[in-house]
Amino acid sequence: MNKPYYAVIFTSLQTDNVTGYGDMAARMEKLAQQQPGYMGMEHARSGMGITISYWRDLQGIKAWKQHTEHAMAQQLGKEQWYRYYKVRICLVEREYEFGQI
Amino acid sequence: MNKPYYAVIFTSLQTDNVTGYGDMAARMEKLAQQQPGYMGMEHARSGMGITISYWRDLQGIKAWKQHTEHAMAQQLGKEQWYRYYKVRICLVEREYEFGQI
Image (cartoon, rainbow over all chains, first blue to last red; front, side, top):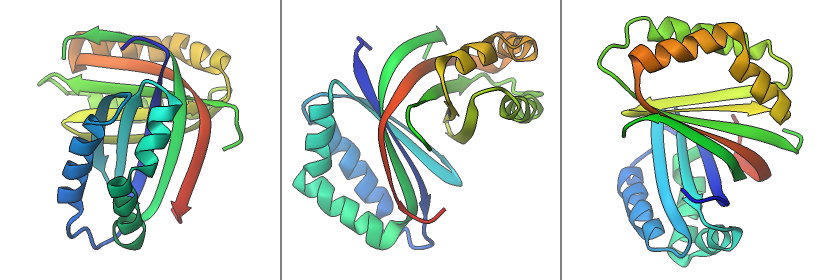
């Protein structure tokens, strides 16, 4: 990815009530892909969930946070799905890779 | 965590031969914890693996990368366990959280 760009690290612990979570997560990923400045998303969960989304600039991150449908999803997340989460907004300074995807 | 600090995002895809990987990962986490500037580590895997380690400064990240035992583990990783990985070194600019761990 061409620098500079940003990584938003979202780490989370779920509650016992994850009804509807999978559908919402899929919907949000699809919606995020349509936002200005969106560059990609990676996700893994084993106990803790980690989702990293990549963005061209801070404006794109802010606009996505405030997107109406995403804001509703965040509200549901706080009420129902997450008992804890942390968001870190990070500037990617350096990167390198090995092998083939 | 007090800013400024760094996040090292390590995303990976494994080969079919993960013999010895679990023991090495546990050993490396223990060893990382003893390094200057180390602040924490988070991990999840579901298909893709994501490991994020947090560091006080770039010197700590560089020293850990070059640590003899870690360098040997990286070499084994390239020869055996990983078919792909990507490392991103990121400055954490902002963070917020919700709920309790």
